[in-house]
Length: 315
Ligand SMILES: [Mg+2]
Image (cartoon, rainbow, N blue to C red):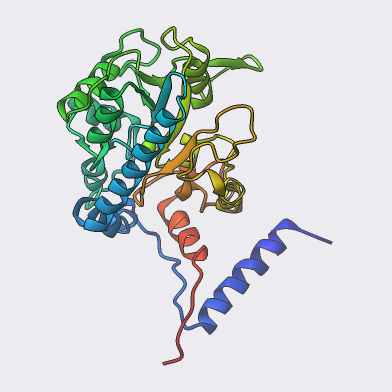
């Protein structure tokens, strides 16, 4: 008779024996969050120290500027550009670096404190680009899933004000409570539940609800596929095919000129430190967990290793 445990045992035995055959030690020891955090050392250093990171952010904003020029040449009415905030225009790598050598991981309480101190740097090229658009007749909206308030359910918008102050302090123009749209603004009730998707905020910009004018969105900039379109999927396989199916939109404005509406370009910024690509690596069901956040550091470590595509040389 088929028994689910049988499948589990067989699979793990198979994994163990194939790893042994390959000469690799299976990681069965319990690892701590601090050990898991060690794996971010290179990613955080890459963002903070490499010229390569900078070259990619400049590349993204140079493409975005070209798109703005194209839209102007085509006389697009009320052109607007939507940018995500974190790891798109603000660099929070110092908050990520704070996990190294500690047992901490992302928590909204510490994140909100980081937002409140307003110490994030600008992503290279971001402020110059945003200011260029504003100085040349365009509008930039900042759509982010940062919380508006440090007190849940409160009307107080202390974190929105801190975000605006942070953006202003590193040189961004045109930043105010109308152009900054955080989580909880322009939501939709779906099946009796409040849905906070970024999609409704993008619609509010297009249909005039955001600030009374109907904008034409010409480009979306973000470090997460969800900044472009929230139908990207959860697993990395789904996310990769979503990118594949939309490949003509990356860095290209109005890719389908036959389309009746103007299609915004998608412009991606690099973020090797965190994102939905990381949760896309995990299969919580395989370890009887509801979601990736409930997985232990050892389980995450194990699944990170299992997702690698490896080639081993015979010495
Ligand atoms: Mg982001």
